[in-house]
Length: 185
Image (cartoon, rainbow, N blue to C red; front, side, top):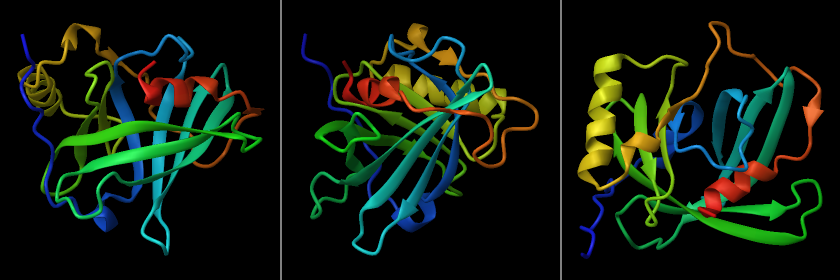
């Protein structure tokens, strides 16, 4: 049976979308550290209209991160369908790897968002704060379910009461799981 067409946000204000987002829940990637916590993404608009992406997580006190670039898949479209490009391995820009990043929902204050992919194999619930109200969380889960995502795979991401402020902790340069999860592999 053909899946329904996914509803995607139209007219996303990229400028307002910039800044830090905390991962509240996601479909775990088999490449992602099981014990990863305080996972977050920071988006910065560049002069050329593309977005610098910094994904970070902490595992056993070590900071893992990877940086990439996001851009609209079709600049003339109103739909919030972005492509995210990372270089593999992260510290040697050799092979560009690209994944889809579709904004399925965002509230009007740009405080929480639901991110998916056309494959429906990956899903993220993001929030400006390390905590998200249960009622809002459940609404986002229901929205994902309506878009035919298997929400039983959603895994809540541990966020500490006092999230790391900067780049604390020894660096873990592997970061491999980030781009593999974005690729939907």
